[in-house]
Image 1 (cartoon, rainbow, N blue to C red):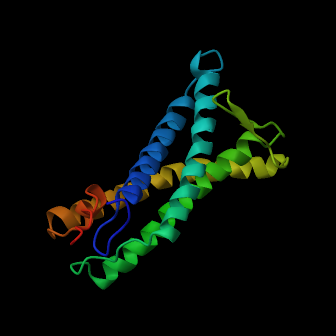
Image 2 (cartoon, rainbow, N blue to C red):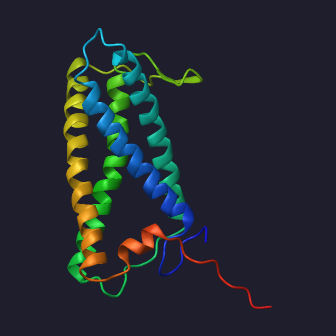
Length: 188
């Protein structure tokens, strides 16, 4: 039940998938909302602090997710998935996984560009590893902005493909990421 099987994802992989996905979407929503705040809004600093802290947590979760994926290989594609769909799904997963890393990394570069660390809910600070130039910071801001909205497009295509496989093809693709595999029955 915890680990992946040959035809289904295990509970750990499913939880990583949905927690990281919802956290990323939540951070994109928070980011879109907070850029409209004025300096005098009471949420101006609080929303930025939350955005930074949760962004760091997403990066940590992403590292754990990738580590788990190495330790517990995902199941193969179902037999109903055509070769071109496998190639497209593989490309989509690579793009989404790259975004899971690049969005928090560019956010980290923006947040620590002047040498200050990132406060994590008042518990500890993630230090700035280096100071970057204003030009590099501006580039990180642009990449962070466009990548966030690019992720929304990728997620829409990803979710649409999963729904197409589920509703039109009557395949197991979506079900495999919603319901963990059953634990193996022991025969004594």
